[in-house]
Image (cartoon, rainbow, N blue to C red; front, side, top):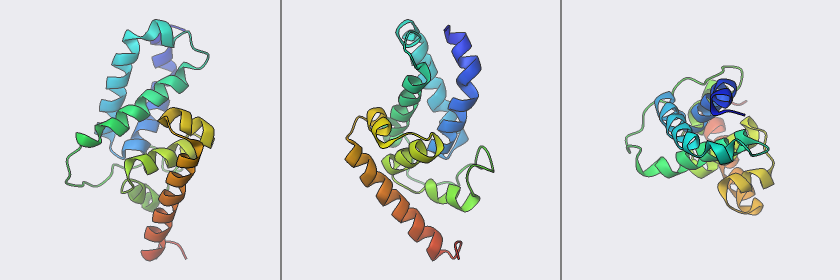
Length: 152
């Protein structure tokens, strides 16, 4: 597969994934652009993989996690969700408040539908660590949503 074909087929999916992960369209666009620039330089090797999308998705995830030092500390309102039917607005707003690793685990698990083992491969950790991040992230979401009276 040529790089241009990959981008034409997968750019919308990568952009949605990055937007859910970053909770900010501008940051998501920056992440995807940075990753695709790096992927283009390595495309000969990436394009030969059985599943190039999985590799590029891992690159997006790692870029998101490494950018934590670059994001200003002042919080802003998260962007509107990329697809209203995917995430309820109150869940979308709360997801953006989670620590980045917890958010990445939940997005990979529930948005990308990956197993704990696959998530561990993307994040470079053990499946037990993935389960810990998921458990803590879900508990934080549950507490935040129920304390606001959103869930009855």
